[in-house]
Length: 331
Image (cartoon, rainbow, N blue to C red):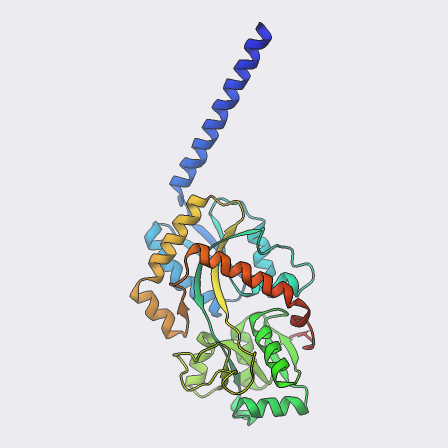
């Protein structure tokens, strides 16, 4: 009898503990965010992957009444930043702002150290960012056809942020379509690569339009083509690589916000709603459009998650192509 009574007491206490724990979790979710939220970014300050989250999260901070602190952790095609967030506590206070490279890097660099599907929860798409192929005026190359002809006759150097980066993927597609090869030179971010391109120390670079636009407008770099399927409103006179006759060479580069796997759906939903509100504000849309970035206002949370899954599947299928033929070397 006593043993039965004791067993019932244990069962009651266990149930009570479960209820208390569930209530504590719910209360913690309701209180979020009660302190600053850290957002880790895989590239240096000034790159598109840095600029877009800053613009959007400035408004998200106002909406949620808490600071979002940017922390730049460049390197390894974004894998360093991804690993840091994948291993963080899933409490909503450490987030990842990343790009297409999140889906690509595990298939193109050894020991990336994360799974793009299992280790993260997609929160929201932030923007679509066309790249532009740029070259210094001193190179005396005025068109993409001129560049292709030069590259067929000599091993030109091409700036990238690493194997599997969106820049390299577009270049791999262009090389396959046009029939040439280049020597990749790896940099930590767009600002450094653009500087080296302007000086002529590397031959050309595929840059997010937002980073290259001021230099193009000042005549310090010549735009040869854009990567997207359609022309960019920021550079309406610059044709796409497909328009210029290189079929199958287009590539769309995206930026999104992620949380560690296991993050409360309530927190993810609050973030998604706040991001959607931010992207819907005319002031945010104007700032992003001025940087040649298309706000991801047409994607729901589920649509963005499906988009990421498709990107990962595509990367896995094409991984053999992504790492071949370019010959990476660090700068």
